[in-house]
Image 1: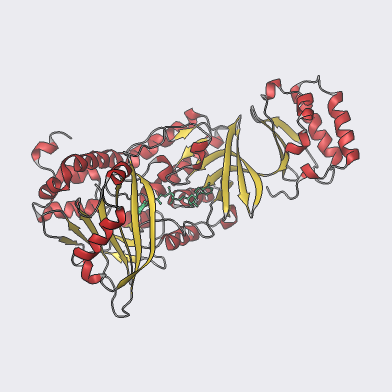
Image 2: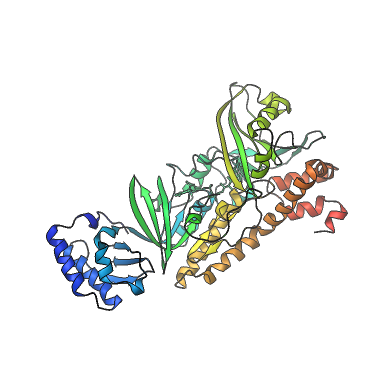
Length: 497
Ligand SMILES: Cc1cc2nc3c(=O)[nH]c(=O)nc-3n(C[C@H](O)[C@H](O)[C@H](O)COP(=O)(O)OP(=O)(O)OC[C@H]3O[C@@H](n4cnc5c(N)ncnc54)[C@H](O)[C@@H]3O)c2cc1C
């Protein structure tokens, strides 16, 4: 897999003349023969680098010459269809200037968030060769996130105990016109952690760390024939990775969307925007309890909700709403947050002495079920596929599941010798079965909130302690959205479900 050097720039004048002569002599041969011949040219020019060859066309815009025993693959990007391609064309466009060295793998995963790292974990366990690339030095160290992970995610993905994880065992909810309510659980219901620590925890569950490349950015993706060709920038140098399949786990604004048409962009009416402060308690003695706050009402958010997720002496406090609501709001999102910190008890007292270390903002897909989530040789997982709860904005658990399912589907498709849309269709069926219902009913609830205001929901939800517990369990991922609605909603709602 490892390749060094770059053939394109090392041709001497004599070598160029020899190349030209050979290429021009064979312009009328069949395409397969021509490819072998071109490999032959390379071989005679660089016998020490290319020991064996297996030339094969890989699509309409590229050729791949691979030399398995040396592990070398050479790519040619060419603007004409391979069937109509002639060596004359190649030569005129200076064939060798298109040559590059590259890397070859079965599955390329783009992104080291919960989705990408979960895919990498499963691929490692299934012995499927893969490369995972991501932009940061450490996975998702710059990702904006509240950092709450429900217990079910910790258990299922083997990260139950990791450094930097703060247990959560209670939730406080505040609805407009009602007193704040606290629901306490006997056991830990999840943890709050920074994305840096979550990334490290996920990384430690993957044995094959050599396949994970940090500070590497995908800049272009071409899916042609039976290969995906992804251009990358690594250590400030351009390179290319060829893979049989591609898992795009690059977040809410997926990189493949720019090059491969899978679905429409998520509109502003279904995309969320949030502003968050990372705060630090200055007083040595104060430590925040493991209580996650959810604050509803148009006073504190532009049609969404506000939250506060503590981590010892640190806390992530944020608010947000759908992009179109944010744009149409008279107040800036930060103003909602400032108002919250100045007025809502007990947060006001708890965070009175805290300093804001970081102000951050980000998008999150809140569109419910977004389809399709795959195309030929390409699978979208996590935020890139809209796998985020439309009602809570929780996406870590769904992304982890999607990453795992994307890996399993990739393995099966490769074993069957392909990655056609038909072979990948099962991926969508799998994630729909696991969490499609939460996305569907989460959207239903979100639309109802937006139409009727959270006030009306508040009175329904807060009728009894039982309802409060149901909602708290839903917010913390202990209960499915559908089940919470059915159990907490009054009869007239139940009849509509
Ligand atoms: C303010 C906020 C608070 C949130 N709070 C919570 C919460 O408390 N709990 C929860 O469960 N969910 C929360 N979410 C949602 C959660 O953060 C996402 O659903 C989750 O991170 C999605 O994971 P992912 O793996 O799909 O993508 P991401 O976590 O976004 O990871 C994307 C990865 O792709 C990489 N990448 C992107 N482009 C490229 C490229 N061109 N080349 C190479 N690499 C690339 C990035 O480096 C990164 O590694 C929150 C979201 C926001 C915005």
